[in-house]
Amino acid sequence: MKIGIVGYQGSGKSTLFHWLTGVAPHPAHAHQAQSAMATVPDPRVAPLCEIYRPKKVTQAALEMVDTPGLSRSHEGTASRLALIREAGCLVVVVAAFDGQDPLADLNNFEDDLLIADLDIVSGRIERLHDQIKRPRPNRDELQKELEALQPLHAILEDGRSLHGLELTPEQQRVIRSFQLFSDKSRIVIVNAADDDTELERFQRASSPSMPVIAIPLRLQLELSEAEPEEREAFCHEMGVTLFDRDGLLRQITAASGQMLFFTAGDREVRTWLIRRGGTAVEAAAGIHTDLARGFIRAEVMTCDDLIRLGSEREVKAHNLMRKEHKDYVIQEGEILLIQHSS
Ligand SMILES: Nc1nc2c(ncn2[C@@H]2O[C@H](COP(=O)(O)OP(=O)(O)O)[C@@H](O)[C@H]2O)c(=O)[nH]1
Ligand SMILES: [Mg+2]
Image 1: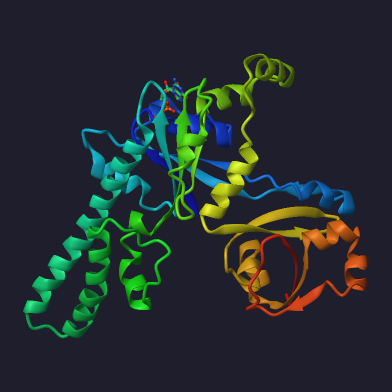
Image 2 (image 1 turned 90 degrees about the horizontal axis):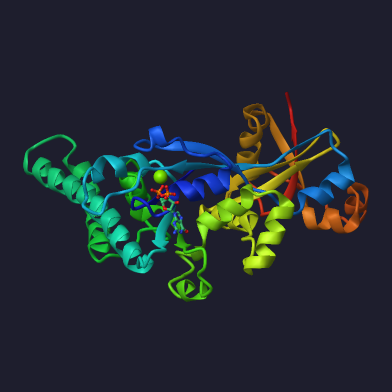
């Protein structure tokens, strides 16, 4: 799943992208989408490595996409929005430096997305009305599509989000190809000034469906690029703190509806991303299609049990190693060993 970094021009999207991925976006390509991977570090990897002493460690990564910002004058908005339609989750960056009002920007930006979605849905409804007026063999189908879309149109017109709503299977099918912004999860980063000491005031806009996090991005990028001693001295002198970037990446992972599971052995300790609610066979498919095809069962334990007890043998002795079938719903932080026929 792609994580789209979006917002208005100059809000700090490329700064965030650089900070999270370690890759500086190319200024010559600023009019197109640029992507790089951001590793999602997990504190459970180190203790697992002590247990297995693996030859190799691999951590899951999110694909971050830096996008050209929308212009406030709406110039070129449609083509720029098209670039972020395929992202599965949006990180909206709004500026709070140089006297800018981030929450007003956020409202305007959300309106821009909403209008783009409404255009798509209204356009389709209009076409359906036209087609239904004429005799054609698939009229019933078109009528069904129209009936599925109308309530969604009403929700959008109301300014409400489709994300997290219980849509009917027909509604899900009908809107899938639209890639509506309203149907994507999001997280908001308020890009604060370097010397802002009251970041809490922005958090008030936060809600479970749209977490708002204030970060002085330019400062954090500079700190991440400094030598450790230099960084420590600077933080001490200026009274600033290093932001928990790893924690933010975990928060973006959660906001995107994904979570980590593990595979572990003396060859490799590895973390993997899977959608929340994903099953054992989906996890197997994420590792290798052969594992899914020949899936027999998964042996499952939790990282916490293994780390607490210190060895697989102890986990088994405490009856905490389970055998699960392919429809088993994976929980965050579980270690899987997929047994398969080849
Ligand atoms: N004063 C200030 N300027 C910033 C901050 N973050 C980014 N900028 C500046 O704002 C400009 C735009 O940042 P950039 O990340 O390229 O924005 P983008 O257009 O959203 O990609 C750059 O000149 C940055 O140096 C900040 O926290 N404070
Ligand atoms: Mg940029």
